[in-house]
Amino acid sequence: MNPTLNLQPAACRPFAGILENFAREIDATVRANGLADGLRAGLRAAILDCPRHFFVQRYIAQAGGNVHDLASGSAEAHFGAIYRDIPLGYVDAAGQPMASTNSQPSIVLHLLELLDLQPGQRVLEIGSGGGWMLGLIARAVGPTGEAVGVEIIPALAAQSRQSLAAAGITNARVHAADGQAALSGLGQFDRIIFTTGLFELPAPFFDAVVPGGLLLAPFQIKGLGNDVLLLRRTEAGGFRAEASLACCFIYPTGALACADYAPRALAETPLWQEVALREVVRLPMPLGRTRYATTPFSLATIPLRSFLTKIEPRFTVFGPGGMGVGGAGEGVNPQIAGAAGGSFDVAGIGLLDEAAGSLALCNGAELIGFGTTAAADALLGAYHEWARCLMPGIEAFEATLWRKAEAPAGAVWAEPRGETVFHWSQKRGWPRLAPSRG
Image (tube, rainbow, N blue to C red; front, side, top):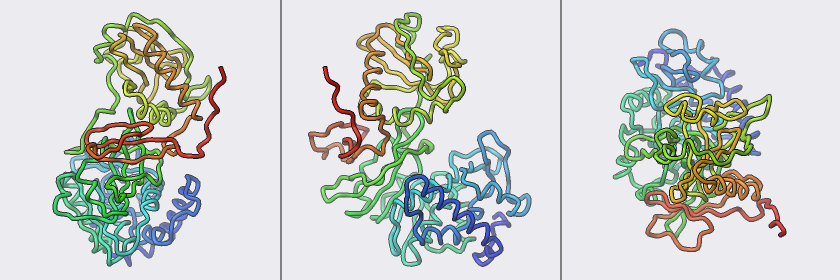
């Protein structure tokens, strides 16, 4: 066990000023991001009673950065990174990054505020990682409540148990197991939270929440990013969304793993091999790009990608390799790099129309069609529909989730995903342009 973490809560008193300032900063951030009343008193107290540095041993503060180890010196030397509003990547004993992070604190607390934690509740966290969120949950539900974590990485589960014990938290337990497999035998919960991006909600979780209880999960959109939905279980057996926001979480592993919505390699797309040299249309489409400033493509397109994921099954997202900026597709058609610089951080968006032998892609600067104009016309039409709805993100939508066999008919937009069917509709009163006149 890391000796710098072998502390009792009373030992945090010398750090009280740092923790209180950290709590104020997080409260101000969540207020600025949609929680007008900020954090409730119970969560602010949890931040002070569950210090983040108890739950970090070896970490990376930024992608590609150096590995830091609390065992190499005093904990205080690391506070500049640990008590900032940034995610921290966990690193194993061999110095290799783990598929887990200590998530951005303002996001963690925002989600817990939405979850409406109350004393005495029983709460399950899937993907509990190093245990900091689980510790906050345990503090918020109090000694009469219970926080149960499931973590698929055994070493990280063991580390989190040590950290929880060091923090003096006795009403939390961690299972080293696959999230779906561990559910059997755990009973029902008042609250369930996932900290990994799901493709679907597996059927067993529909019964794991008590009627009227809440489940919070980030659901994958095509490409990187997630629609986070706060879902209340209904008497009919489904879930109805009560709140939403856009975030980015890692892909799950184990039985919950699904990469269907991950970016695909353009060069490995069979249709691309057929149409790559048959460009038929090129139009300006500067998503996130201006002459002197650039918003990362992945961030600039989250609302659009969320919308197209719901309404257009042929919509797809391409990874950066093979887009005329390096990778297997380099040289096939170098002009797809585009007029605005030609590189983007994560992906290009596009549409595949196999029946028409047509492919369209937007590289962040231009919309380019290949084969025939069918795919470009369809992608441009979907973009116009998004614009007509005033470019909504996930916050503009009502959602209900059903087991596939129980989903009622008549949804505005029905999106089947594995065992789950999502029913989407635009919220009443959401600003919408009047239909155009002929």
